[in-house]
Amino acid sequence: MLDDLDYSQLTPQRVLVLRYQLEDRLMSPGSMSGHQAERMRQGLGGAPPDGARPNTAESERAKLADLVLLCKGLTARQEAACRARYSGSVGVELYKRLRRPCDLREGDGEEVINARPEGHADLVEVQGRSAVYASYRRVGELVGASEHSARYLVQTAISKIALEQFRRRRTRRGGR
Image (cartoon, rainbow, N blue to C red; front, side, top):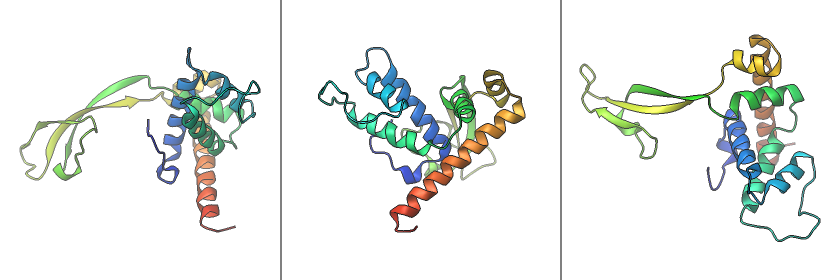
C-alpha cells in the first residue's frame, strides 16, 4: 500500500483496487477501524460519537474516504460489478518477457532469467508474476448480467471515476 497517494497519477482501475484493499483491511476482524469504515460506507463521517481518540489507522481512513469520494457517482450495479472485478485476484499468472535493462526497477517482482537472449542484443529476458482478475463472464455471473452487460457496467464506472478525477484536477488548478 502506498504511504502517500498521488491521486493525480492513479488510473481509475487502481483507484478501485486500492479502495477495496483498504476496505478489506479496515473491515478485517480485529481492526479498530471497522466501525469507522462502516460509518463512511453509510455516509456518516467524522469521529465516533463515543469520543474515542483517533488511532494509527486515521490516515488509512482518510485515504479510503478520498477513494470513496472518487467513486461517489457509481450506481449499485456498477459498484457490484467493480467489486466483483477488482476486489481481489482470482489467481496469479507467471509470465516471461523481453525488457530493456534500463526499464527494470528493483521491487517490480521481476527477475532476470537470461541476460543475453538469442537475437535480442539490447534486451533481457525476465520472469515475474501478475495478478489475474475475474473475467467479465465471471463478473456477469456474480451480478446477474451477461458478459457484455458486465463489461459495460465496469467500463461505465471507470469512465465516471476518470471524469471525477478530471474534475478534481481542474478545480485544484483554478478552473470552474
